[in-house]
Picture: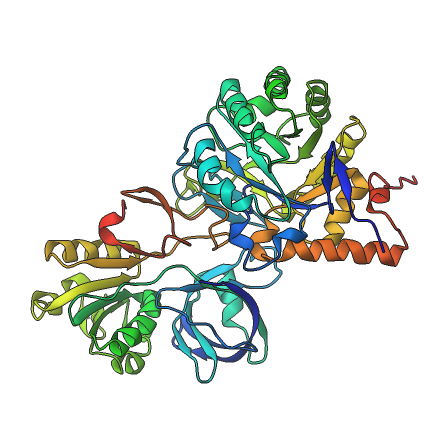
Length: 256
Length: 305
């Protein structure tokens, strides 16, 4: 799949909640096909503390309007700078990078996300729906104030929520959600993205229930294109690299 | 029309801009972004006698104006390079130079011997300066009798252009440059990464799994410039300048300090097209300065005071 480097113009910077925002980006060139799970490498600015590009999952793509959407959480200096961008400003991207998720054998698929890890599950849910599958979302957030765009996810499938403090949905972590104790017999695939501890618990649940599971990993990267070999991930086949062998891995292949 | 071509020993480069080993994969990773044929040369990933998995994660951390890495020479070994990589990359319209590393002198020699037989590999770069492996690597580059031994041994089996990549983690880099020149090196390249570390104060732990790593990027450029200038004034063989080059001006500074050619490394991670921009920028500089030959920049630093 051919990779590009292009300037994009910020069309909108929408604050989703106190930590998350969505950048809408429009390029001069027609966007290539971007697959669920793929990411972009964002050049933040020329600041000494935001030297490297930031790998960010693609949240959604509107091919008709030629707009790319990125859901980003403010976690450090780079994402803080990005959160302050205004319409009209320019952002340079290297894209599309990484692999994608695989299609489930059966109809129903469970997409489990935690925090900003819900980002790649938007494009995934949309793609599954287009493939006549039935995506179901199960999301965990710290509290109700951090819930993201439920109405948008709802277009593709039912959404279940868990929050750490019980301020929305069920109280507790996603793997404690009552949904996982019922209605799961016809799930043929589990996809997960979020904090590693959550993904490990999800993968374990999936393995115990004999359902294949794919996890989308996040890690620090330098190049994002397989040149520097910095984003090493141990797998049963030896060292893999998140940027080119991933970010999506079959959970059974991961040594984590 | 300006002349951009330079010579490194017997090796003719169409221009002085090359991609640094470890930062450019095998070149293929960058072919969506640039025409590799425009580059003076590509120094491909460090190659050892047998497969190496590299170091555990995390292997990389961003630092002010740079990054630390501890990849640790992950590669599939010289035989895999010859059977699976070389057939594809030999068709590039640029020189492919292999960076060679090992744990023992015998390993360096074995790799060099095998590469000597490859028609389209006109040079090797002996890596005696990798800070991220427990054995070999920098051990050879920080102890001058060892640097002499490994260079002499490889020189005996390697007929083409032999470049030795020097470590900055020494008191006097000129001493090492003179040592490998005496042992038969055709050129020296410098600097490899500076040994450094990063600490997570919250966790009170080192950030890298290996505790220490190699610092690269513009943060190291002033150190690299100083070392290139010192070495240029100490040896007769050509110097290849490396260390934090982000643009044409940086490359020109290295040439003024005495570099005949340069390697662009970490900058490729930020802008995959940077090498071609550096070439174009050097050409523009020469035109603006009314200079017809890039070689006239080499060591042209004017020290007035």
